[in-house]
Amino acid sequence: MGCSVNYSMITNTGGRMVNEDSIGVCDCAGHKAFILCDGLGGHGMGDVASSLVKDVFINIFENAENIPETLSTAFRAAQDVLMAEQKRLNVRGKMKTTAVALAVDEKKAYVGFVGDSRLYIFNNNKLVKRTLDHSVPQMLVESKEISESEIRNHPDRNRLLKVMGVDWNEPMYDIWKPIPLKKCQAFLLCSDGFWELIDESKMCEMLEKAADVKEWLLMMNDEVQKNGIGKNMDNNSAIAVWCC
Image 1 (cartoon, helix red, strand yellow):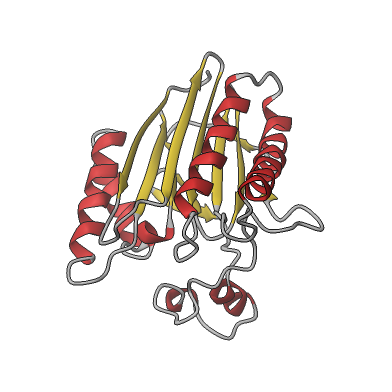
Image 2 (cartoon, rainbow, N blue to C red; image 1 turned 30 degrees about the horizontal axis):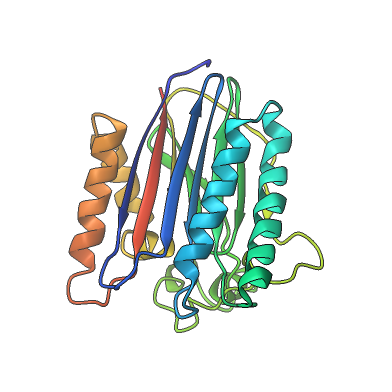
C-alpha cells in the first residue's frame, strides 16, 4: 500500500441485555475492508441481522479481486441473504440492520452505508467529511428545520428512513466516489450508540493527542462511557483506521 493502514476495533453492550452491533475486518494482501452493523433494537433479531450482514461482507471481501465493484456487490448480496433468511425463518420484517463499510486498496478508500451508523474522515487531525444518516433528524437538517447539533438529542433520532432487511424497490445504500488515500488520514466507523455520546470536536482533539490508532479509539471510548453514565446506554461500537 502507498501508506501503512493500521486499525483498532471495540464493541460494548452498554446498558442493554444483548449486543446487536457487529463489527468485522478483512485484512488481506493488497486490501483491507471494515464493516460495522447495528441491528435494530426492539425487533428481536437485530443481533442476528447485523451478524449475518457482517459475515457476508467479510466473506465477499476475502475473495475480492476488484475492490471498487466489490462494495456494491457486498451490499446487494448481504441484503439478498438477509431477506432469504427472514423468509426461511418466517420472521419477515424482524431482521433489520444498518451497515457502514470502508474498503481500502493501495491507492484509494471506498465507502458505502445505509442507516445511521456513520463514517467520519479526518485529514491532519481535522474532520473533513462524514456520512449523512438515513434518518428523520438528518432529513430535518437537510431541510434546515433543525441544526446539526440537534440530531443527537432529537426525539425522532431512532427513526430510520433506509435500512437493510426490508423490501428494496431500488438499492437503499449510498456509495461515495473513491477517496485518494494519503498520509495523516484517519477514518472512524461507529454506531449511533457511540457517536451520540461524543462530539466531533472531541474526536479531533483526541486524534491530535493520540500516539497511535489504538490509543485514539480508547480515548474516545472512555469519553463515550463517561457520557453514558446514568443513561440506558445503547450498544456502542467503533472501528478506527489510520493511514500513516
